[in-house]
Length: 226
Image (cartoon, rainbow, N blue to C red; front, top):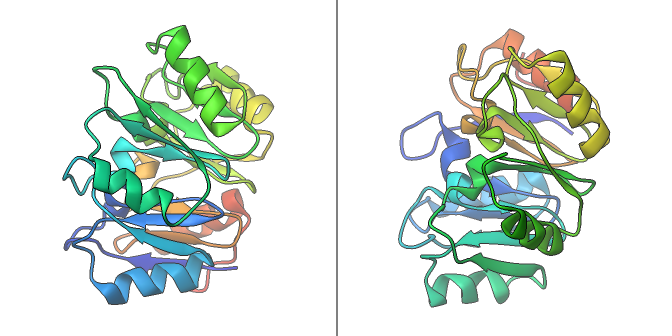
């Protein structure tokens, strides 16, 4: 287990573009093959190369765990097929105006925290797809929980201004340790610059030594870059 550093499209905001679970890593078609192979090796999973609705912003648009994948309504048929052909996970296309499910859902294999603005019927679809209980919550008083933390089955790294009751809820629902920190030299929107799973983590290239230490502590991975 280790922490690795990566850029995507010349940006350290790798979590905007890439989504990882214990089973797969989904990367845009435009990502170089070399980067895709690195992610497979580092995370110990199969890489699926596809865009979502033609967009490269996969990390923002998609949420997933080891049970399922939640996709926005504008996903294209060939993109759904690319995911289906590579995995037997549950796949749900959300027929709502909201699209940034990666930003609205923080999930691992034990539970999910969701944007409190989501409708109950949509939360139920997310629960059925991911196979976990989904609970409304906020982080640092903000609703877009998926962008404010990165969760794996080993831990969570969250926005440094998370409130005590919010942290308690994350621990209860996701059933893992919660740590706080930043990525990419002080960015508090953790998921924009950090992906990971039970095996390892990959952070944006601007992430500092102290930040890597906090990632390692929170997600239970060893930092080999400090």
